[in-house]
Length: 158
Length: 474
Image (cartoon, rainbow over all chains, first blue to last red; front, side, top):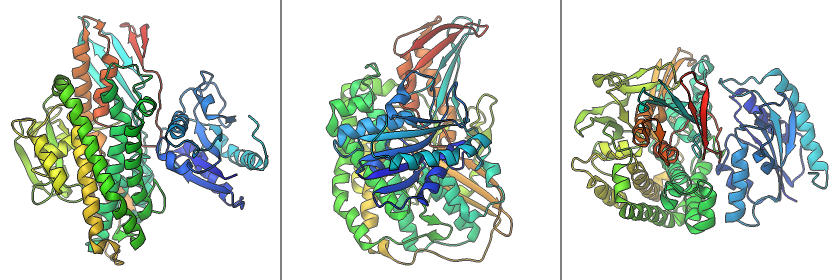
């Protein structure tokens, strides 16, 4: 099974860089030839070509919630982010779900069937900085560990 | 009695915007404001960094137009180094730039704008979007995806990352183009050019069926700004600034872009983080000008390539003085440019020099000021750097395309709102049209990769004491 681990975010936008940093750490820890690790600063349709050709996609990204605790990590399916739960405005996920929908319609069979999102609850980015807030920094080793567990588990546990 | 109507968010824009409409005592539109969510602190972030790093750093400002910032920044660096690029380096930079233009314009037209045109402004928003387009017109959507990915592929060839490119550096380029990469471009380019023409036909067809809508939609006069080459053709990478006033008269011509401060000033408004540039001589806000596809085509006398040139003539016929004002014509201009860029890619790639190995010019000189200006997909982009003698950044000033259009976007929203709100009553269809008006400018609203997908549109009508009177959702 070809797996893509994708860290999404902007490393000069504070907490938004969590996905990118997690991917960079994971790249040094994974040597399985069936697993590719990338970080990208884009979303939406720009992701389409990047995710094409994989069976499984694991995304690490930031999320801004209304009632959640900063630093908390949620394991989600992309469509769950549409759900009218406590989750409000996410910088990226709307487009991820839409992108998957578009990809599956346009390129059936080429888009990963199994998609898991590790979303780290963050402060909303308002200032250009490479520094992440303390709680999100503490979440970094945890999200890395969760992804490592995820790829070693044979079956998806949604 | 002042009422406030808030529209948030504007769906399908690449970023996050909010519209506020303020009514007067009689319930008619007094002011309309288009708020841009901006991330602060970029200038401070740059301080103390080497100018060499700037093309990489500025490419991270925006997940939508990273190549534009990357190139404007490298150009400012060229000036700091006091170097002239090798012919191959300049061609590679142009190739990268044209690839981004195709990528960006294709994305905008097919995936953001065409659902409005093909389904109609009043179609159900649940259908009037990219997914609806794919479901009902998959062939059109596929062409858009193909054009976009062609541009993206070239960007990837020249930079080692897909979206935040590491291709240009002060003094030239990081790497040469390989012969097999050149061949790949040449193998695909004819189909790409044909697809660009297809998109133009699509828009013409829309115009033929909806002549009144196209002619009247957010149609207002403004000045226009853009770069032109020495023949007066639209120019995206180098060239001189030309500014035409609201009546189509050239009031500034052949202005060296490094002297931009002699014609442009910026105004700060307390309700927006984004500054409002204006044409100095006409003052604020009378000096409103527009940039981007419409601005470029309006100031130019022609296009550099044959097919685009032919279409450019048709565009010019839309108005008596060669200046086309209707906001919907942004789409037409965008498509002509996409064709122009595809033809440019062909001609750049056919030239053997494109595979030259001499891609970088060294220099030990450090000038303390550098200005890089290009025409980004959304319009004129200025990067202005001040460095110390060791090359560390002291200050940076950026004027982005969306900033240049800031006054005009506010004006477009105002015009649409005024048409749809009378005596406190909001006519059906206003929401969609405000969105369409903003979308014409293709604003790049956040300095990050943040983007919203299909969120329901919301209007909140406030009582004078700001309590919510009514909430409307699309």
